[in-house]
Amino acid sequence: PETRATTRLRLVTDDAITHLSAMTVAHGDRDFYEKKRKALGQDPLRSDASPDILWSKVKSSAKSIGALIMDQSFFAGPGNIYRCEILFCCGIHPNRAGHDLTREEFDQIWAESVKQLRRGYETGSIITVDRDEAIQFGQPNLRRWIYNTAKCPKCSTSIVKWDIATRTCYACPSCQPTQPVLKDTTSSSQSLESKEELVQPFNSHCARDTVAVRLTKGGPSLLTIAELKTELRSRGAALGGKKADLVARLSDFLVKDDPVSPEQAAIEKIQAGESRAVEHVADIHPTQAKRLLEDHNSAVNLVTPTHSTKRRRQSSSTRSKKSA
Image 1: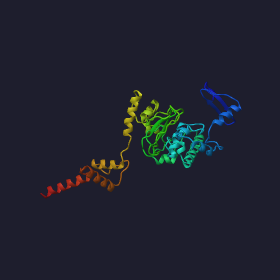
Image 2: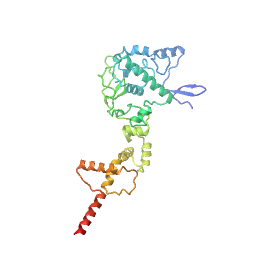
Image 3: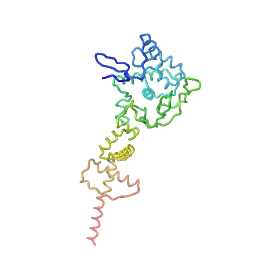
Image 4: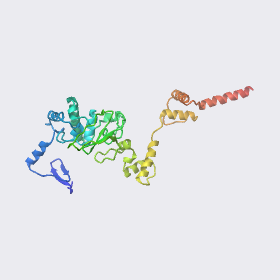
């Protein structure tokens, strides 16, 4: 690819060409590199990383683990999304202080960091949910657990967010038991944590979800105008109006998209006197349908005669007239 105005470094090998884009880049010799490298912490992707060295620093720190994972002098590599997902998978609240963690908890965090960053390296995407888990929780397209999510996919608890060092942190109060809020500070007067609030998902450009996942997370408002029109077009709906109009229109369709259950359909057909000779997409067994109707009528204290009952009553009436 061609370089751009923001391209600061171009690496060329036999297999690939890599561009590093950034606002500013500091240049230097090998000594400059070694000095910067020495300042970094342990990288979960490096085979020579030492979790023991990292543990000795973490267990001595009063900072929250949520802050430490984002501190490149401790964990070299994980960013904000990984911080959120790693701690969720470990069931550890971001406000837990480093010196309050057990070695077992730290080892769990380190192992999860290695697992998630390696998957990201191998797939080229930030995917933190296993396919089988996504299917298990009824969201086969789920890629991340709670980053930029309103409800926890595992327990449906509302996700909370707050800022740690100006970066948004996420947690599930149920899956990650709440701990007392810690005060991580760079100085004695500056607090780096803010008050918790519920999450209103936004359209993330650094971790873009599929249309299906965004519809599940936050509804049609998370879709672009082009995506809204595509969804509406597939439903044969009008495409005119502003984005707010498209969002409202698709919201109406999504409410109607929920299919009627076989049980509901069976009750409706019996109440309507529908002949069983009429073929439907799917029918439940007549005996089961009868029990459903009896349960339904008992619940609403309403007896609705079926088509066959009406015929029996008409036959009885005819026989009475003949006898007379």
